[in-house]
Length: 142
Image (tube, rainbow, N blue to C red; front, top):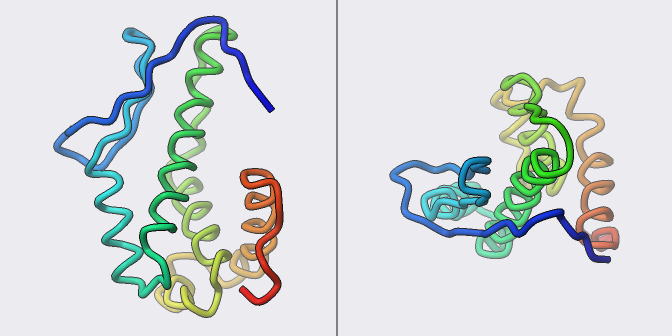
């Protein structure tokens, strides 16, 4: 599958002094900060992820597509801010992390980072995203 934007968009990796990523409509660039990847790596290592480097690459891939979404909207239609409320976004990300490995990430629910009633749907949400991003479901043994 390919996707063609109406104009070129540059992807930049940069030292930003904060864990962040952003679309600049003025410069027509997507910037992913090195600190964002460092924070992801540290987070996955502390969580005891079996392969924190692969998990970090997956998280940064998701970040890239998120920012590309901003670029797509900005270059294709009238300017818009498509962010959900910050709290809802936080619950979504925590839910998807939990859903990727409910046993290994049980602390997310135990510590109240995702409400228990929301946690029931997290594994299915993660599976849907995994199929959409990677074109397949995760192995049944995961």
